[in-house]
Image (cartoon, rainbow, N blue to C red):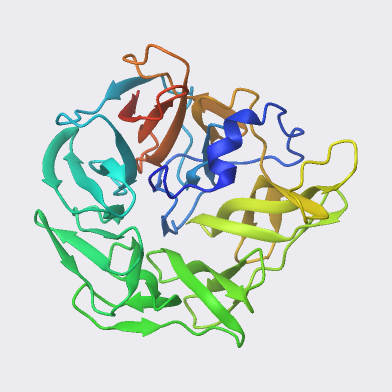
Length: 380
């Protein structure tokens, strides 16, 4: 997503200097299938690796399956070509790590270009205002949406085409070409790029929602708003046709109030649990509420994973240095090196990781400039 789409948690994460308490669980992991926050797949075996950056789950919380390499690989950062643009925010990639997409010089709803790299070289620059591509198949078919989510797009053979469905947004595509997103602010599924959308079943009272992840077996993850209540609710549509919300855990004695599902890997859903942080009351020693507001409720987001088969929740730890992109290999952290072209304090986000766990793509965002520079990490 572009910085114009990022929420307060992502924008202000670097200001949160206090690390979470150490995780109370072992994260047995392996390095293979990795795709960005807005995509998903399930592998046949192995456990998970979670990718994080800049204090928050990287564009989503990425996970991988397969056998963890020993020892940890060494990585180098390779700046991606920018074709003369001053800023490119990486928005998605395919499971092989060959295809990467970004949004160049975005001005909300008015100006931007879609940039597509293949094997680190720019293959397409599409001057379509507000359009971003968030997911790809390994064959280079991408899906995305415009800034206002009025049109859903498919990218193929260097061209963008709209999907059927009127006001719509596409978020993810699996290797079979099944696409998920929303139509008319309701979760929807396209069986193929040329098919009409099918609404996904939802409970009564839903006012808004979207499907944001799909695995190769057809499991779908998304979110719903019920009766316009905040925060929104994580929702799961299983491959067997059953569906329902995720039952939230208790965190440090407090009931979680929400979960932002960001990716699904190897039977686990990764994302951010939202818990109550504090309530500031007007007139109190730290009151900062606006006139007429008596209290302000603050939340914090914590990285968790949810096992689809058992309903088990695991809390995930985060390292102290949140300005660096990194991911977990088992219970170890592999920090990714900085962009060699960065010449000032910079925060990094790794938005996608290759299926073998030895490549990643994201961007750096200078503290002072607010511009995004795309980066590919190669590990051996």
